[in-house]
Length: 125
Image 1 (cartoon, rainbow, N blue to C red):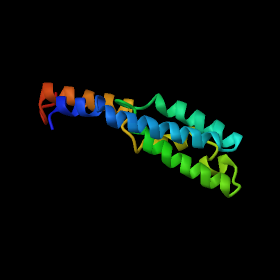
Image 2 (image 1 turned 120 degrees about the vertical axis):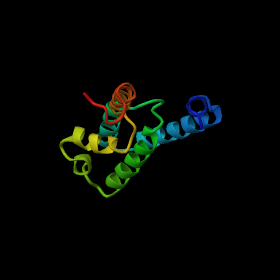
Image 3 (image 1 turned 135 degrees about the horizontal axis):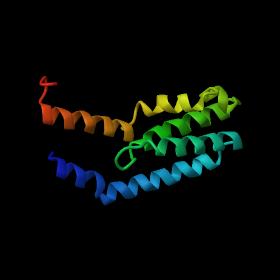
Image 4 (image 1 turned 180 degrees about the horizontal axis):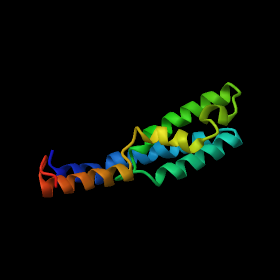
């Protein structure tokens, strides 16, 4: 698939976008049923992670779904939310972000691609 076709398929596939939006709203409703401390941490993690998302950000949705499942299980088992995430919640988020295409990853790839195109592979200064 060409780059242009891939772009249009990803960003203008209205059926897929509508489905993903509906699923996201359903997950958000489930998150509202979490205990208050879990809800708070889930929301803060989402805000943190959205700022690192790449492209359309849709790659974050499976991560949020898994996180929601994890939080629901932890709450059902009577665990405190920080028993799940650890006290360094940012480090927990960074581990989750390893599974996503992030803004910084996109920038790193673009930098390397630009330099390799200009200098050619193996032709460094």
